[in-house]
Length: 184
Image (cartoon, rainbow, N blue to C red):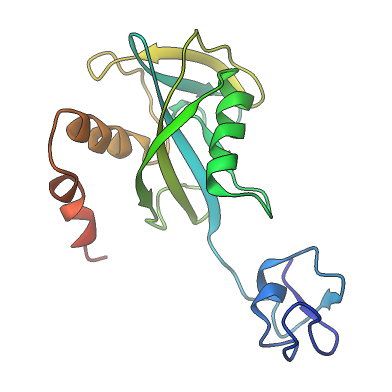
């Protein structure tokens, strides 16, 4: 639910309808429901983590719809950094403690998730050990480019294609040029 402040926002000292904190925060102490803003919608922010382990990368089989295999990940909590969310989600879904190495790309196609518009910051991480499914993961496994399971949900097949091209040495600019020049 989108909220607006009653009077000036104590966070910004701005008029309630111009304060950006009210548009993104459910925790603003001066917030009330606002019919003027009820139709305001933003994409949901998520993270996905390509976890490299000995033998391949970790994918999870989803316990909830849409059913299929996916890169571990989930929603960023309010007040949480992308990096913290990535480490938390990796641990929650795979029981692996990861070390983030780099951000691969940020995927934002409104059609990437059939449930809603989401934006995902995708990280590449490393971990040791064997993944154990937990939270909303039904199963976890280690796969290579040539042994990917079916079906792979969301836009994760395209993300994995980008990842494998990048890891083979294709320059980042070449891997993502098609996305940067894509017109919808």
